Length: 515
Image (cartoon, rainbow, N blue to C red):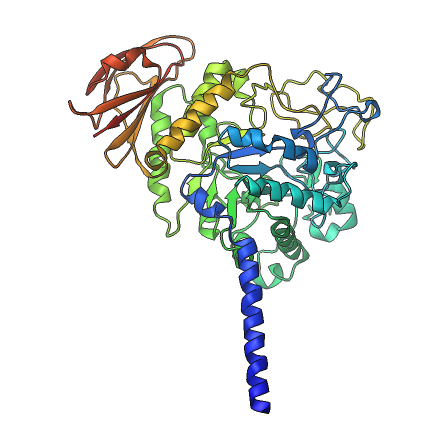
């Protein structure tokens, strides 16, 4: 009888643990975001909850709470999720949702990247009319995203606010005068001290706090992390943290803010772990160097960037990829570089290149991120900064400001066509071979994505100011091929193995070839 009871208890214990593990797995391993990203199927929209659905009634660009205006919150952000879904978005990148620093601050609300605490959420993102706690408001937002099959990446800031330094100076690196280190020109944050010795690292509070952050975000429902300035921490830090996160959630994505173009540490007291080592550490992807598009006036560096990266990424045992970093929250609005035509080029490159498309809130709505309150003295502030600090031409991450938007729907319509094209040719675009098309004109970007007897052909005049004549060698075409024009049908009768074409400024030609 005792033996039977012991066996029963053992079976009960094993069953309970298997059941608990199964429930945990069901709750945390069902996102598929990492797999989506590895297969170039994540279409990412970066947004700042604080401004995403803000209500600026008087149109001055600033949220005046005394006038009944409301800033963005987890709750009112839910209202716009269907709008994102209609744009083909299946992944949201949340700019930091942790508390912001108020001392030595930039802007009247504090920079999103001036993290004051690892263990709580930014109270600025709370809806005061909701009966839910802030944590449950955030959970509701994540749940509503998941109901729409939208995954969520949360930003992990790289440095700490001065407020955090005052409370926990032991977490920070210091210089020879024992002052906390200011990395680069980021005057509102201080550099964390990360031990490089494994025994010290994994017992250090800074590592333990990062593990807590991972647990917290997974508990909210996050599907991945975007590591701000990932290069600033060593290989072993990321390797162990990523391994820890994957033990909690198997398909958890790690995206590194890193690039081939970035080769210097943010401080002589900081580490510099390049993008290759970050990928070795377990990151699934990085930024690449697509933000250099504005400097690529000819096709040579464009092709070189894509082909070199494609060859490099195949060397890893696990799949790796990049995002379409043509525009990020750190980059001047494409509208200021080349207007709507240049922005359309970015939309189509995002839709057809071997990468995960990436957009910043306001870009598709035509926002140039020029704020008329820039650097003016504030009527009210919630930090020790009395001025509306902004980076003109970039989305505001420093103040309680207006919803990012513009005066045009042209880019919205372009995005919908581009995403429709992508979805109808998803196998070719996500898994197909990238083939450069030979041209006698280096102002023309021309390539194909080819798989299963189907080729998506893209031809773009990079010259925004003038027409260009080009002679192109079109591959994968025969007399029996079926041509389907998607964009700019005026040249549809010219398509053959040698295509002579006159391209208008910034003109985009897209067609598919079957058989």
